[in-house]
Length: 248
Image (cartoon, rainbow, N blue to C red; front, side):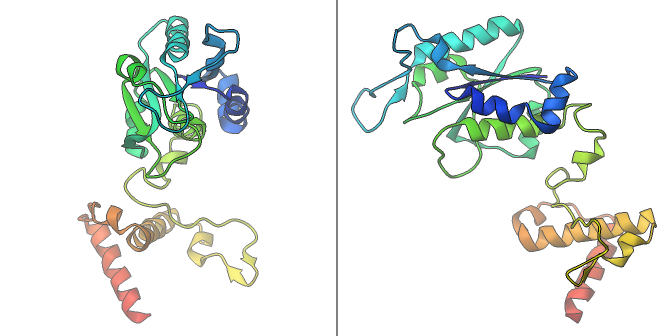
């Protein structure tokens, strides 16, 4: 998979995307993440990429021409189909399901906006969809773009050591992740749950499933309502949770 990020701050993006797990995956040519300086594609001596908005108003708008020049450069370099996404608070909210859908794309361009936005004509001609991290506004699209790239790339086969590394995490199967513990066994008077020390993998898996259900019900009732807990084992876990709640 290749992800190209159009930005006014390529060094910042590159520093983040080239570290840790994603950095090692790039070294092994499993994924490729490139950050492109939009200013490099201007046609004026000042490298100006923005101007006042037509119709008046505060701030400035990223111009269509440098964005288009950068976009076409990437498309030519990739040499194949490219799915282009504009990071925007007006877009659909990003989630794990959307990340799994985008994983099917071989080449993705993430466009980072700034100022008051970008020229609508570039969006109409070049952008396939707009994505938001949530109902809030940031100074620019770099943080959302890096979040989206990270979320997608970590699911690419070979980036993590095993699919279970992300399949057991929050949101993969509609549940929040169970509590995690590490050494020492007792910390500040708090002990690790005994079942995690038992060595019985079946009981540990059952406990984790039960804790995920409980945590989702407590913290994300909206997600809990969408769960299918109709299996015999899940119904048994629910009865146990009800009994434990009644005893408290």
